[in-house]
Image 1 (cartoon, helix red, strand yellow):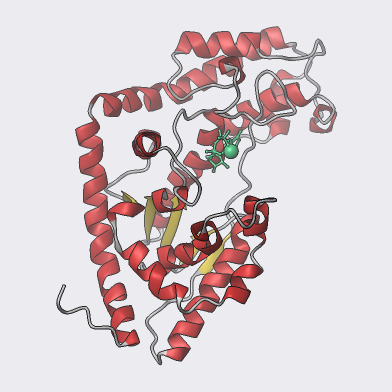
Image 2 (tube, rainbow, N blue to C red):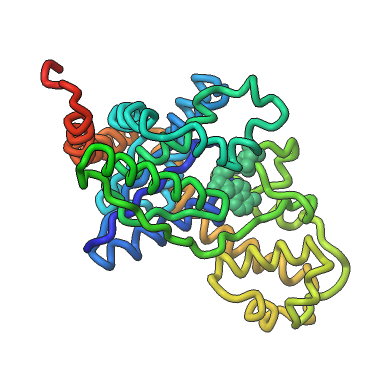
Length: 340
Ligand code: ATP
Ligand code: MG
């Protein structure tokens, strides 16, 4: 059986090096790996998930575009993968409703993500936030996904998708839904703030000096890294010695992630040297990695019509793949959709 991988990402704007190394680059690698095995990837911007909490409409619209542009600029190839925004394929919302009637309240009550996300104000959370694992089930089942990349926090939701698929298939005596297997993605890099090795690099940090944006030019990148917080010690040759030096560990970690090398190999190269030598080398690899990405990004930003065209083409392919499954679900339930 050829692999069909389906994965979604929440649309965010102001993308930074942490987003690139922790999320975007993993998709590019996944795409190439899956394509090599003859399979295909469906990648979507999860805008229907974004509205489970209040999202300012203009910001949401802009963020879908920014994230799509960043993905394409980073190497997600709309000719190799099916790339689209979820709202453009109405089958997601349609199937989610049908599956809401198969999923049990008791199953959703066991989802630990809802407990975390709703926090103290459970009663004030949207029904969508409670039910979003059902939308996630629809997201993968409509494409007959064989494999779904899931981190630890999402394993429970994929299990739920399998339970929903099994119950639907059993209740309505069909083999419509394919049970997707989890794919454990390689451990994602976690990039920390340049001002504080104890907090994550984030778009919501008030200091722009804390992060490297995908749109920063080489001078800005070099200046930010020059001013990045460090300690006065030279770099050690043993990775274990970085444990108590969060800022040093973060900078070495960024270098290792970009060079695709184990931390030990980076240290072997720089052990005994201070940050005066290490920071320029780091700046160079960051600048060279981001150069083609930010060039393509600004091209796409000046041509939003091209971006919209690429997303529309992706959505058209996704609709074709989803349609028979949604039609099959209506039919299995005894619903008449013929007059549409
Ligand atoms: P916010 O501050 O609003 O939470 P953010 O900068 O953390 O924003 P998100 O929109 O939360 O960015 O994350 C988008 C994706 O990027 C997620 O997959 C997330 O895991 C990843 N990501 C975000 N920040 C980092 C980071 N510092 N290191 C690695 N991955 C990251
Ligand atoms: Mg975040």
